[in-house]
Image (cartoon, rainbow, N blue to C red; front, side, top):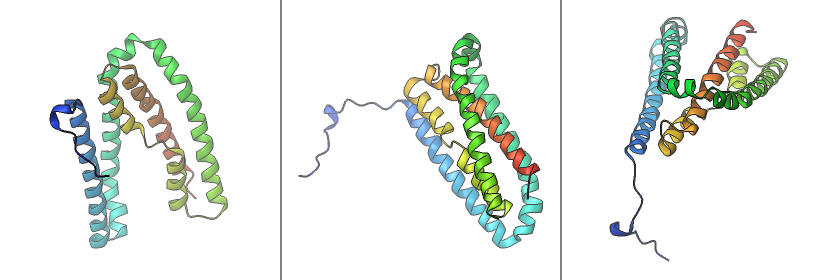
Length: 182
């Protein structure tokens, strides 16, 4: 049976400007990720691994840290009023997240130690353990919550509180990896 398009006068769905903006941002993020990946490949091919690690990453690391901290500050700034008005809600959101942090640390440590005992190189073990322990859905959750429920919604608040708790926890695990390099 052929698929027939819905005539325009019968279509009742609307697309909000926020949904369009979110789609555009996510498309830009994919393009930026692709461009950064191809730039890294170009640098490795033309400058070599040693230059990439000793020169390029030396300058990129502070920029990445500043970008992460700026993102957290902006998230908090946009939600600061809502966070201050609803401290009990923040507590209700934060308690399960702190329990999740314990789980994340357990997964990370188990994975990191197992990879070390298996004789994997630190360069393989640390990123694999961090990836296994992380939740890559935070940014998508924020975009979805804001698009579907609005910037002042409880769903948007919950996703921001989640990021404000989980990002420092992951940074702590990265520091642990750096200090225990084998």
